[in-house]
Figure 1: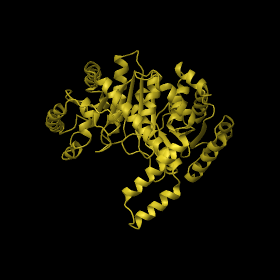
Figure 2 (figure 1 turned 135 degrees about the vertical axis):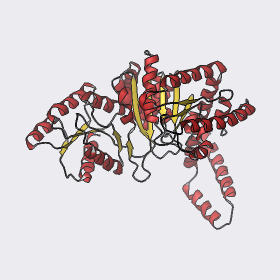
Figure 3 (figure 1 turned 30 degrees about the vertical axis):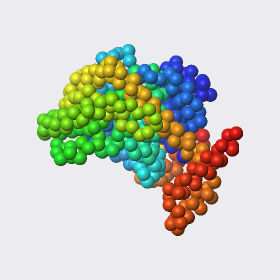
Figure 4 (figure 1 turned 120 degrees about the vertical axis):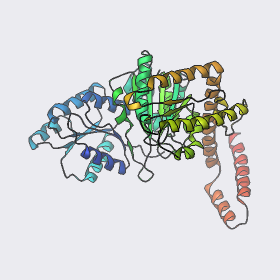
Length: 134
Length: 344
């Protein structure tokens, strides 16, 4: 049997329409051998949690460029927990002010990536995080 | 652990269902054990395959169909298995079918599962049938199975689905010719999607001509039953006397969807009345057993016959000392003698 595939959900919550970053990351993870479920723009936290449940993903990646991260991210975490998915690794990409980063990490976000991040770093981090959960 | 998950699945717990789907998809021991148990509870779902070339609108059509099925049958549940290709180089996959299915996300009676093909070439993944059985056992009344973008030979879906829908688009011109040798033959229903585009009537005429020819042939084939595990083309038999209707849809605007749903339900009724539901079910069970039999025989063989013997025979053949056929005879004889000893 082959090694278990890592399944990742890439989603964009909220109302900004800039999905290039999400697509670049999705593509990079695919090229790293992961199975990436891409759900597209303008998702509510409930929709994201529901998709994560149906797809039984190991990882959820959120891309937020609207500035609404302090409202959206805790809600996604809460919805995932309500559904019983307490072991999902959650990472965040976008423009996140320094002051908010610590708060979000304390709330359970695994890593936060800003502009200019090397996608290889993202892949490596995800593999490590999933491995340590297993 | 597994029995707790199975109990939860039977009670309608969707996270348990999702976890079991993963176990089955990954072929784990727990997953295979769960599948064996769940199989006994299957046989109720109407499995509907949707196939066609990339970009013809399969996902959008599935989105519209699932919504319409739920509107018509509010007490029934709909599962969707959407297969997308895995990269042959990295093994990774980008599964993007959900992007077209956003209308379905607030309906808890619909469950969408994306699947990577993981190297399988027939348009489905190896475990797609197994996942459809899990959904069946979990009480999903309709299981919509969307294949990868398919061209000519990705016809595995026909062995799995009760109703196979082939989606095409107008303006493919001469491409219709190239499609017709393979994938059109498996259609129970033909859909020309994006029917608001120019060339739609031409496409329909083209398909109609093709169907009329094929219809004559499938009647001639009539009934023939194959009772062993040979490769069969059971769909030819099963489709006799059902002339595939051709429908025009614009899936993103929900045009033609009510008519299509009607035809799908009619097809299910036709299959049941004509006894072909039973025949299709039997054919797919036969194919399933055959597949597992081959896998087990091969596993047994690999356990009984040392790799050294295989390697030395390969060398003999390469030296042209013996033929490949002779090598196979030697291996089979060795295997037979060896397995008799070990089983006594």
